[in-house]
Length: 81
Image 1 (spheres, one colour):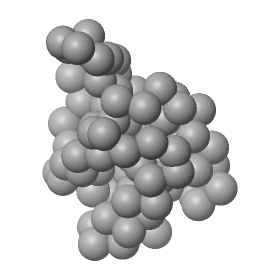
Image 2: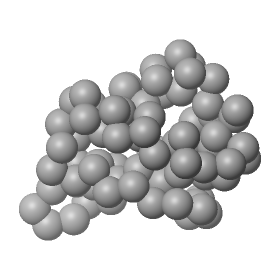
Image 3: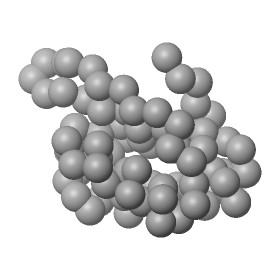
Image 4: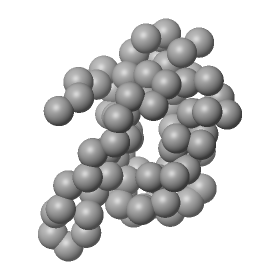
């Protein structure tokens, strides 16, 4: 399990909203803090690493949890700048 400083719940939102909300939220963090993004949109598995590569933030990890009725993804992003 990865430790995070701040959680962002994007459950029920679909592409591109989880990335847009992540982009807004990460601005509130200080350098080195980790943001945990909860999503039930499978697209986050490709979208978040691509967004991190574009913005320079670090993708620390991605976890998947089976929960009823949907799978939940937890993306961890470390603020780089």
